[in-house]
Image 1 (cartoon, helix red, strand yellow):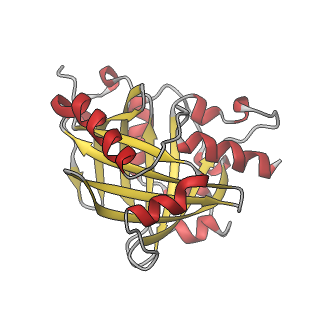
Image 2 (cartoon, rainbow, N blue to C red; image 1 turned 120 degrees about the vertical axis):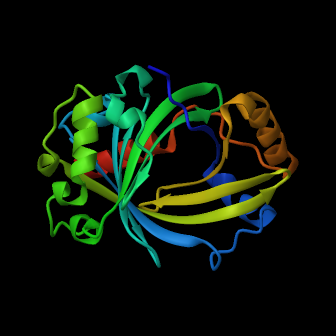
Length: 244
């Protein structure tokens, strides 16, 4: 079985102290960005620390996005992902009516992993976010099948807690040297703020693209956050603490 890899997403995080500088340097206006509210579903435990995020610690990310002016969606992401777990169904799955499956490299500094994700259009996100519907209503049959086929963890979606929201603004096609980047700012409970810059490249070009991308960002007077932690873990740990 061939190891599928659709591309490499290279990410750089700009910390709170430089978000405003980055927005000025990249001409990111609040009027031009697409606003969204983001929620996560977790099996939040009573204990503190990372152990309170069992799904994330098992490489499972369940995310809901309420997109202003567009279709809402839910995501099941497995990261890091062992591509040998892909069954024939998922090895060849791409884009279908209302959902899309991808297997991509996820590069943040020296942390290079693979992520597999299934994103589906979902009209139940607002109700689930407000607590008016159970979390399982926000995930499709295909997403549940993906979880069953490709992860050994068994979970009841309706028993999970909804964490959030995260207020986000997303900009596409941001000129950055030779790159057209995506920028996304996250604001969490007035306590966390950061801006992520990302590009999607061919795997064969990824090493040089990462070097060049970082240089382009530095040329704008920006100093990326050197922590290798993903924004998802930072946010989930913060949101889980708020729920205790």
